[in-house]
Structures are given as C-alpha cells and as structure tokens.
Length: 204
Image (tube, rainbow, N blue to C red; front, side):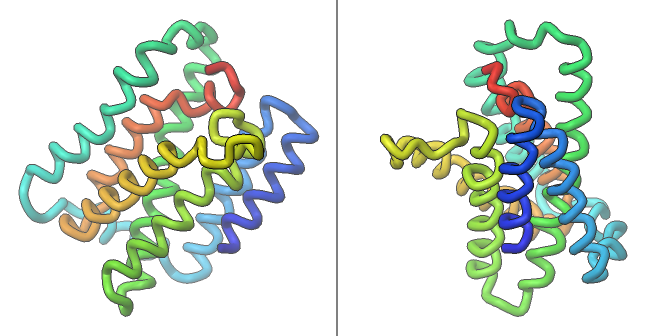
C-alpha cells in the first residue's frame, strides 16, 4: 500500500514539474521504493533463489512467451510509427529491462513469499490488487491512456481486467516454477509490446 501511495503523490509532483517527462522521476521513486522495501525486509538476499532454474513443465515457458507477445500485434505494430526517436527507443528498451526485474522481484517474488503463510489465493489476490492499482493511481496521473475519466468511470474496466489476468498468470508462473525467470521474461515482452514510455508521454 505504501508503494502505491508514495507513487501517487510523486506522480502528482513530477507531472506538475516535468509534464510529459514525469515518468522519469516517478519511476525512479517507484523502483527505489520497491528496492528499499525489499532490502529492508531482507528480500534482496533471496535473489539467487528467485532466479534459479525454473521447475516444472516447459509449457510454463511457452505460456510466458505467448502472454508477453499478445500486445505486439494489438498495440506495438499499429503504433510503430511513433517510435522515430532513437533516444526514446533506447529508453523504451532500458525501461522494459529494469521495470520487469523490479516489479517481478517485488510483486511476485518478495510479496508472494512474505504472504506464503496465507492461502495462495489470498496472497495472489493481495499482490495483484496492489499491482493493478499502480496503473490508474500512479501511471494514470500522467498517462491519459491509464487515467480514470470522471465522465466515463467504467471505461478502464477492460484494461483493469487484462491487468488482473496478467498479474494472476505471472503469479502462477512464479508459484509453479519456483523461479522468476519466466514472469520476468513475460513482463519484459509485455512492456515492449505496450510501448511503455511512449504511452507515458502520451505519444500513442
């Protein structure tokens, strides 16, 4: 909850200061809070365990890749024309790497481990609710695509539903394989496919 609240207020602050470039400051705060909470709670010491060789069927790998590629024909290909700036393309690639690692380590690895004393359904639900909340409450402050429109408050429901499914699947990938490798890979591909920073800067 603290991550969401801190992210929301930092988004308001940086949007007022930097406009379309607010995402840079917001994500430095957001990623920093994920790392700080994980470090203070001893989560970072589990990195080797989190990234060990995945267990279980190779079908989990296939599921991770398929889910990660869904956004490519839907979002990336139709909007590829906006990606004309080499510096922004470089930032887009770097963002996908850093964000997928930070978010999966915290929301799936750290948080699901910390909630392992609860029924799995409860742990996955708690992690997914907060992960989904980040998008409209933090990213929606500076990205029109993820903002809640008071005139059409239900317009974001399809987007929210997709986020819920994605979060649950990534949680399932971690719990079934006991590794974050496939969730991180799937998240990385998803961040590429949804054009991340181009959406944050309202270019899409």
